[in-house]
Length: 153
Ligand code: DQA
Image 1: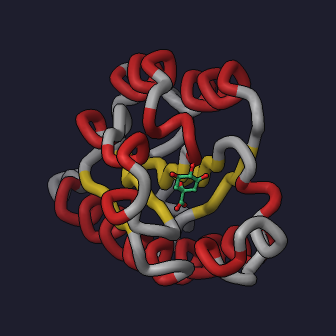
Image 2: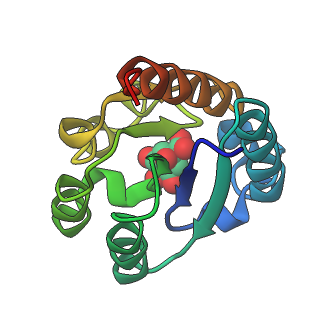
């Protein structure tokens, strides 16, 4: 039996993973990362629903739609991370844990990447480990959900 659905959400330009700046983001494609996350979640008893969009409005819509039917979110919001207050506000209304993920380490890159508007509404952030960032994010989310599960039910 599934313990619930986890939303894996990717923002702008992440559809180009594998081709885009491979020296920064690696050679794995978005489909590779999604497959790995879905498999790790499945092993832990969760379903994965994945979306990617280059549009800020679509990303906000996906966050809103996930409010009632998901138990957590793994989010790589790409450059929206650094300035999208509409994403920040949508995430604020999301009732379950959010793990912010980045392949690169934005803190060691250009100044504009040092700000995250996602971090204040995330349970935590994993960045800088390439594809391993997603593995760590799954582990963190699953551990968090297990610790908050109602054991009296
Ligand atoms: C990214 C980091 C962001 O600064 C950038 O805009 C991206 C990818 C990452 O995964 O390292 O699109 O989120």
